[in-house]
Image 1 (cartoon, one colour):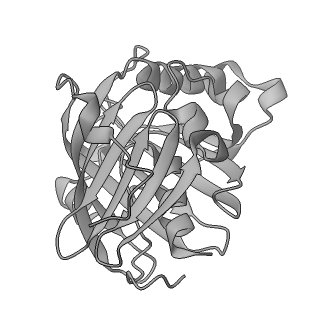
Image 2 (cartoon, helix red, strand yellow):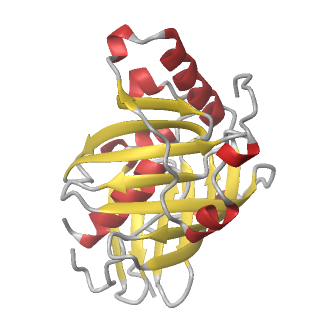
Image 3 (tube, helix red, strand yellow):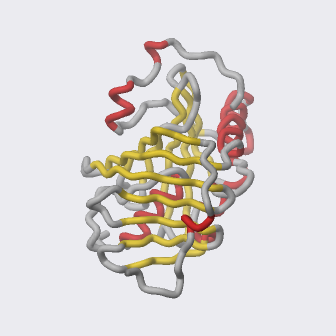
Length: 245
């Protein structure tokens, strides 16, 4: 898969932060809940490490959902639909174990920005219509329409997982809740899977693992979340007429 697509799949599927799967930059391919017991929660060290948080899931038939599974999906829909502004930091662990840090900003509907920390020169922007994967070091910019990517529903005003995506599996246990989605798009070059994980007791999105069309996994963990910072539209601006300087 071309490198720009690899970045886009991981970033856009996961909504809130990004990953390049640890590759180089050369172009190479809220419902009411019962709080869990303290000893059932993921340890802070595990969360900080960026390693996967284990929540068991089971396959579902979206046309014949159990009441419990529907309640879990409704809770996740509500979580996303109650987000307007969202920013924070992320750490990703690629399939090769490489860690990359960065910061992200989201302003719904339609706008996102992901900046990788140095020495990476990568940046992803969504301005409400288009998505740009930018590499200042290589002086390149790859453009896509949002409708070509999973961002078409994840940055929408309202999200309904059953109607807007293909849900494969759902899980709820003492440690939290989780959902596995499958997404294919023109920009991704094939079908990818993402597992979103919401640890107890707050059930906020903390981590996701993306499996790309080639079967490689990348785990992203977010922290330092701010939901009140209203962002100016100019930080999401994409210059579609000029070569990057």
